[in-house]
Image (tube, rainbow, N blue to C red; front, side):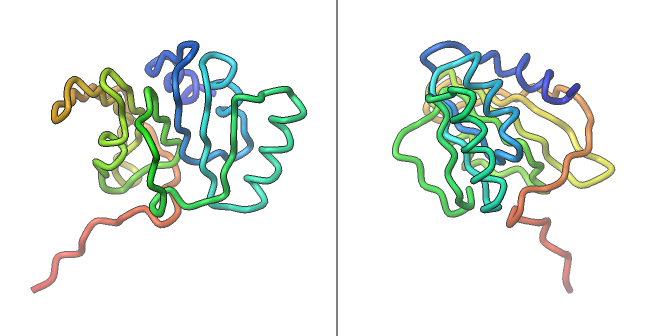
Length: 154
């Protein structure tokens, strides 16, 4: 729960915000985001996890949280998000997530490969301007289908 707490603290979800969660898992973080903020779109690539989380969230009354069984790397949002929580790591930072942020939006993402990973908070300051704050070192399993480092070849 320590990393989840840091994620919520860093992102500071607020009512009426439009949120994207990448990696629904059990739905715990989805529920936390929905309880603290507005609407949550959560993407989960594993069918069983998506189905179970969706049922749990509905049973608990989280109507503002929608779980979609799909790969984020095939996802094209129809509008920007105020907040994005990437719950799996990215071996290589992928700017697409920052591009999906609305002005003043926040992105929590863990980048790198074990044992050297770091959580960062990215804020969108303008159309082509972001700031990055490094929060802590951690180790988190990578997202399925996340781009890997290119191997050096001669």
